[in-house]
Image (cartoon, rainbow, N blue to C red; front, side, top):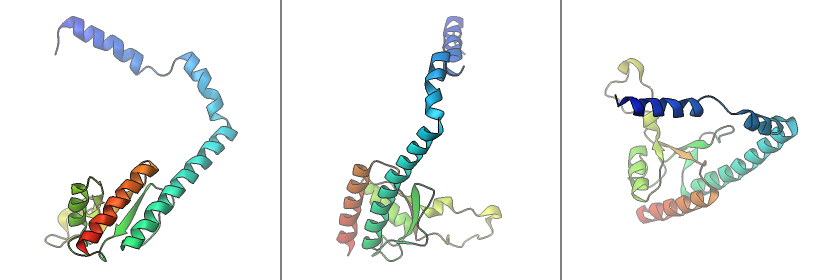
Length: 156
């Protein structure tokens, strides 16, 4: 609800925003769809993410985080923190401690589907897992890994 002139102005702007790309923009995009360009971009993304994946997994493994499987097609990995010193050996506690260090991770319990509440009262089977993302820029990952290393050292 708004005055008629406001609704008309928003409606007018909306048609420019959701109407698709204009003809010059569409023509400029055509070369970006050519096979050689797509292949080069794909290789570059694979290389950059491969480097970041290796950096993150190798550093976390040295700190005591274990990975059942190394990711091949995603930008995150599920790490088992059970081997870390308490209280960091619990996904939720790890999440809270990391957050206090300005590091975002996600306890895997958040992803545990329990349809029909079949496991009522039972703790999640993923309680010792954490999801780590290597999507951020490499410099951000390095700072986060340095902070995690210091955090774990304080609990050792």
